[in-house]
Amino acid sequence: MKNKEKANSDWRVNYVPVDSKINWDEYFMLQAMLASYKSKDPNTKVGCVIVDDHNHQITMGYNGTIAGIDETLIPWGNNREVPLEHQKYGYVIHSEANAISHAKGNLASARVYVTLFPCNECAKLLASHRVREVIYLSDKYSESPENRIAKKIFQMSKISYRQLSLSESTLEGFSSYLKSLIKIK
Image (cartoon, rainbow, N blue to C red; front, top):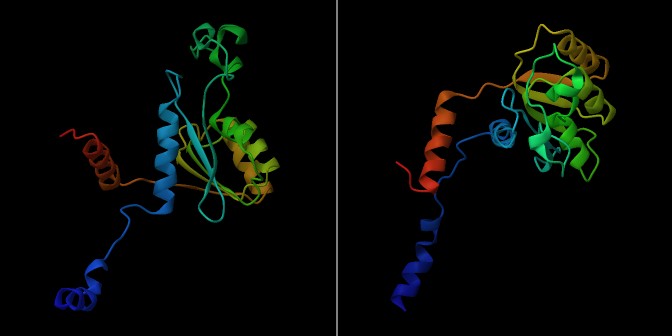
């Protein structure tokens, strides 16, 4: 009886402080980064995760080819001096378009996490689906006409966009955590 009384009096022993190592933005961008890793594109790997107002993932995608085709038949080069039929650009589906095409529900008011700022074609798709915000990791094509048009589309559609920077400590912590899952030192 004494042990049971002692256990009942020490019930607070299981209430320990907890916290997450990452916030929601970091969590979803890391997922987008993981999605980009699946891409076979040898030059630009892009991932996208779309989430709702409750921080539930709606869909995700990466830049790749049409599902079910033999990807070894695709010209993966990015030399624009050859005809389009011999460039990856004629065959590759962008991560945002891929994610949208696999979405099962409404994307209105969703947040989009993408590793590369969307092109104008993807901006049109995102605006048509009434997403509310785009969070991106890289804007390496910021000077291109496509990028400027995408930003104009977002402004006209009242879609906010912002760049997310992942800290070195977040990336190192995540890397250490992944290694610990499979016991790599």
